Length: 309
Image 1 (cartoon, rainbow, N blue to C red):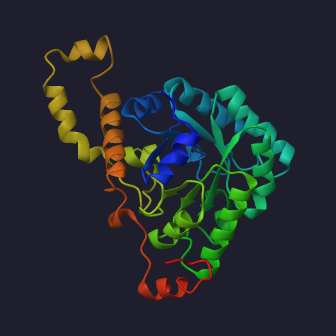
Image 2 (cartoon, rainbow, N blue to C red; image 1 turned 90 degrees about the horizontal axis):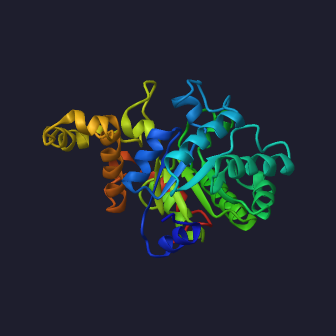
C-alpha cells in the first residue's frame, strides 16, 4: 500500500525515520519498491549518473519525464517525487505549474521537488495551489552551486545557518510539504528539524533529521567520477549474503529464466534493504558519513538568534 504525505508527517512526530532513494529507470525502481523503500526521487542527478552530463544543469524536462515514466512502471505502489530541472520553474509561476503538471499527468508522480528558499516561494505557493505536493531543497543546491563558489558544505556560519532557517520558514509558509537539506553538518541540520513543522530530510545532513536520501548509483558504487563524502556503497555489506543465496540454489538457470533472481536485481534489492535497515535503526549515516563542524565554528553558531537548546 502506497504511503502518503500524512503518513510521513506522522512519522516525524513519532521520530520514525523515512527512507528515500533516487531511481531513474525501471529495474532500479523495481528493486527499491521490492526492498520496501518509503519514497523514490527521480533526481536531476540522473542527468549525470544516467545520461553522462558533467553537471545536473543540462538535463531537460523531456528527459526527466522519460525517466519518471520508467520509474513509475517499476514502482507502481511507491510515493514518487519528480525533480524539477533547471529552467523548468525559474521564469514564471505559470511555467512552474505547467512543468509540475507534466510530472503528475505524464509520469504519475505524487509530488515534485525544486531548489531554493524564499526566492522560489511564489513558485511553491502556485504549484501547491494547483493541487500538487511540493518538496523544497535547501543547503547545497546543485543547480546553483556557482553562487556558493562550488560544492561547499552549508550551514557552518551564522549567515549560512540563518539563511537556511529563513528559507525553510518561507517554504513552509508557502505550502511545501517537506524539505530536503543537502551537505550540512548534523548540528545545524538538527536545528532546522526542530524548528520547522514539516518533515526535514537529509542527504549529507547528519542523523538529526527525519529521514535520509541516497543516490542509487552511490549506494551501488555505479558511478565512476566521484563519491560524495556522505555516500555509502552498500555492495560490500551484502556480498556474503548474496553469495550464500546463489550457492543455495540447486538450478541457477531456473531462477534466471522463469523469474530473474540470479544476479544484479537480487544484489541491488539486498543492498537497498540493508540501507533501509541502517537508516531505521540509526546506523546510517552516523559520524562516519556526516560532515563535521569544529568546536569554534559550533560555538559561534550557537550564538545565533535562531539556535535553541
